[in-house]
Image 1 (spheres, rainbow, N blue to C red):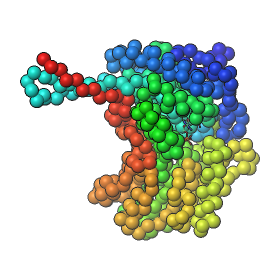
Image 2: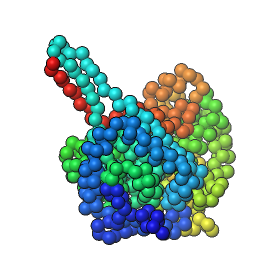
Image 3: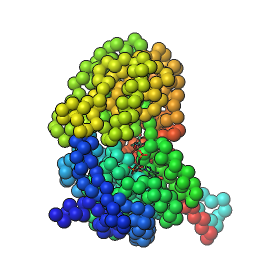
Image 4: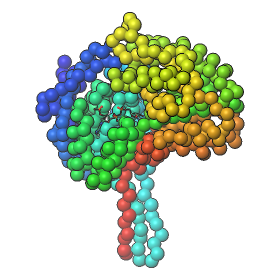
Length: 484
Ligand code: NAP
């Protein structure tokens, strides 16, 4: 089938093709272990070709009027929505999240095209009053140039469009390297970009299992002017160090360790809904998911009972089956991390209220499933309190007063998202202002939207994606002083 043929290849300079080495690697279902597809294993040489293609077309693409570029973006949005079901199935097959979440992700991913197509028309400049009568001072904004984008596996569609949409809207051209666990969604998106008819080289795709080699090419090739990365803090730091050599611009969306606080004046039912959405969506594999749940001691018992009741109703299984709410973990490494965090907590005195074990029976035998878990009696010194777990485990910690819980919430090198529930409006403002995080959900467990800035303080990153700020990352500021 010719369509499938092109779907298994890289997209460079408007053409589908394999890696120069001819090598491929296979993509597996995290639910069944079954091999889904082979994709090219590109190397630095392929990355260089993609960068050159992006560089070649940059003058043509960046010179288009913003509304013309927006037309391409709207078309990409339309095709994504038209193919939502097919894209969602590809996404779930390789990533594991339940189908209804995958459908939601495709809609969310498409919305970045809408938002940034509109924002491209509002890249305003400025005029500045001069100090002498014979001068005029102007500020204009221009695209940075070729962008190398690197994305993770947990949102295989949204992390791609959250970078590509603003980059293309700003007039930049892009080379994308998706995560090796989830290249098929990226390939399906590029199939759509081909249909949209972007000029050849505007958006390029290389799949690889040599992230270091390709990453090095991105860092060392002088034609790349910006690295846009979402992933772990560890790799983010490595890229930031490497980018320093040529002072390339970086935009880094890194790890999180979100506190989720339930105050004594919270609406507990709303807090449980928020905790369920924040903690168990995508099997707890989101950078903004609640990782530490602090509950005021006076409501701990009531909140715990309600939460455990909800968690016990979650349906675990293959995300492709309708009705499943919690799928498999992405891979062996992720699975081991979750097991280790739970074992470590239990060994140090935590109590398992529900779950607490991997599932390997019957239909779970070939995947990496972990029962949705609630732990209590969590104390300092447990790994789960210090690191991102990235799994369906809710650790509950009792607290007494506001100052103490804010201090505990901020006591981490991470600063991506924080949540709290309270019905006292003064407390809502006071606490939101004191939390050292880039995103605060107040009585809201799902704050991410395309029109608002997404990004972290401290070691959670540099820059913002989405919102008005999202396009600025891809723009240079140019000051023009005109003598009359
Ligand atoms: P990761 O290991 O850092 O991988 C992310 C991406 O970086 C993948 O495409 C990976 O390629 C690539 N990569 C790995 N080593 C590299 C290197 N030396 N040079 C260049 N690229 C390299 O992270 P992950 O475990 O897949 O993703 C989970 C992390 O992402 C979590 O920490 C999560 O919090 C974070 N995240 C953050 C946000 C946010 O917006 N802040 C959103 C989603 C996820 P391979 O796949 O080939 O290894």
